Length: 102
Image 1: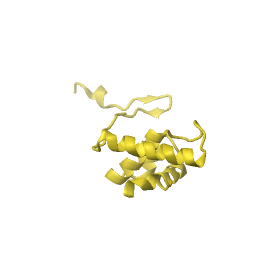
Image 2: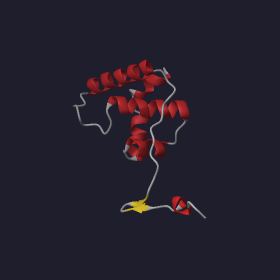
Image 3: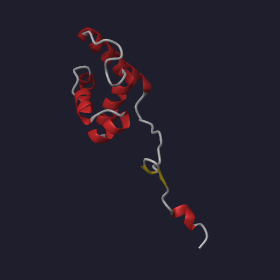
Image 4: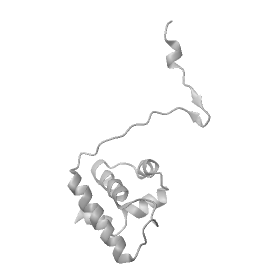
């Protein structure tokens, strides 16, 4: 048959190749910016220095909004953000993240 070579999984030096993609979140961008601003204010109130957190306030806002909107599993959120599962849980239960449910 012609084209069977296309069906073979080719491995790179770090294992099987994977398909990567970017996704959209169907939430208005101003909501994300608002949550990011609340998170920034919370970090400032705590005295958190710049560059000391694993994610930016925007990254944390997207993580929280994906969790609330799509019920994305925490392990998937952590992997997508390249943070540990424990850090993802801390970010989801951060006092600034509670602003989403208010």
